[in-house]
Image (cartoon, rainbow, N blue to C red; front, side):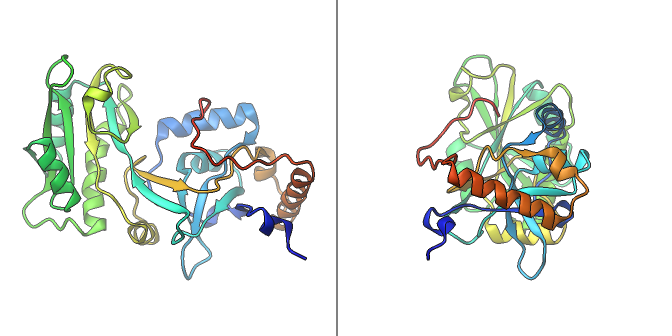
Length: 294
């Protein structure tokens, strides 16, 4: 007889020891604090992080959900319910978010970055900066408003000193982390994720814009190598698109923090899955979706 979960192509949801999870990106402390507070009030982990196994080990790299995972660690949880995916499958797509920064004057925003040891800023036309980043000839580029009038912006490439190897993920990531460190700890600064480098498109939604930092694309092998070496990319720049993603699993935080064994917690989750399947509580939505309560 064919297994029911195989018939409906279920996501691979597993309870895992938190100590076996490895981060590939830095968490955002502000988001972690908000998530920790929400978990304490709600009492449930709604959306499981996405993880992939690290070949040759019993560890998993967190592809999406670093802030949720960090919040659960702060709450003293021992286990986590995660969705395990095959990083090499066509169901996982790795894209890049850009940082839209608000809360700091553009001139100060640029000045702080220009003072980072090993980083050089140079002005360049936007289309040329895009081409240079696509060809890995620079580390990143920045667009900043030069007046309050829409459509007025200046672009600067971000590069290392002479001899910097742009294709060395470890070295380039270290410089990008130093860049992000200039603004991520400022309580007046907010980091918003965007997929456009056109400031004109963003003025209707954001005020007090400092600029946009456009990061280079990463490959899955880069992420695995960085994670295995204990290195992390800047917060909120990798964007993993997951087909058949599980949401609203609603696992009690008290269970994740409880003293029960992993086997006991897994048995509880498997029983919940049977109940949900029997009562038709799960639905697969194929269309793109906006969530307004994240």
